[in-house]
Length: 135
Image (cartoon, rainbow, N blue to C red):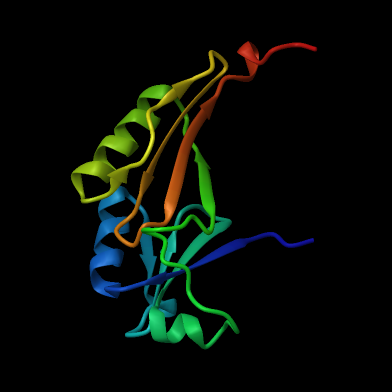
């Protein structure tokens, strides 16, 4: 079974995108970063590959989705608390990310999302399993 996740995203301005995600708290992997790609480390098992549009096209046989106009994927990450989720979203917005929906508090789960500089949508959620509805 696979043990790591690599999310590949096309970006218009590689340096600007790398700076955005580093300022959000992700680290960069220099061994997988060059003028065509930037590898951002989310966790020990999750990596985001930021690929220039031209390089991204070399992996696909269709057009690249304009994520500012359409949603091609919703990337969801967990938070350790509601406060951590709120801080992450606030930081993303202060760095140029766009809030695309109101926060939702379901009692057992808090979720909120932002679109990054290239329009890719990210959801940050905290789930309190002790409050999860029992069936």
